[in-house]
Length: 400
Image (cartoon, rainbow, N blue to C red):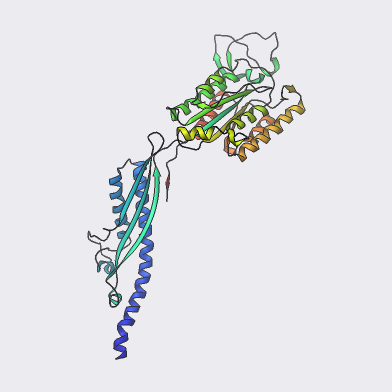
């Protein structure tokens, strides 16, 4: 009699033990399936311009396909045991896919996809001796995606306009119109006469490079709602800077107005410090960039400094000697350290610069890949182009 009474309980307990293992395996498979379904919908919305309703259907079909490929047969109690292909059922009728869409800057959109997956797992006959015929396994997941979205940025150009920027490059400007082709050995000597071919001066190459950069910024931000720029130049003293403003017009005008035959020594410390202070004021109450972007585009901007030289520091506040040049190096490096601590990304470009100038710019670059060397105009334009591409790079996010 005791055996007769206990046998169903023992058989049921054995069935429950078997089903518990199966439930854990099914739970893991269902979680993987819901993850894949959410990510598939997120990718389709961002990359294939799929509608929200179609993305929901895709997620549900993906969910069923992923579960079926694992050998499960929802809705048919016998097929789970036989391994046969399931028929169309209502096993996932209670599964839900919720998609919330948000407009971002410009025409950009972002989506949050929530998948709540429910799978009715049939129990084996032994378990049914004690409990119901099936149990519901649940899993949930969230994925996010976005169409291409530009990031807000504030950029300050710190540009060398010392006398060596008057020296010629190897690129020909004209074979018919003569000009004075300055090099280090004949710089400002009165006997130098105009000759042909006329070579492009370094300052001219710089203006072309900056024009390429601003074209990229303008293309990425035609409505002038994401990009703010400014510029400052230096020789043995800092020149007056422009103010940070929307778009690139102010910075472009400033650079184009630089003299075609600049003069003077080199002292970068004040110009770099000025750019940094405008982007990240020492007094937080003077901060302008974050509020400006918050009001305009709702973003916290990435802040950049582009620091360019063709030489090495030879002066400090207008006084030229070797010790002052090294003092300028030291203070410039100190400002670069502050920029790094303040999360200002610094790009540096050494244009036909000597070793000491290269060393300073390598130190100041935020990362090794942010440092560029250019030995001719083509390489200079390419360097500024690469910087522009990095600054305005748009990234489509797909995270789980």
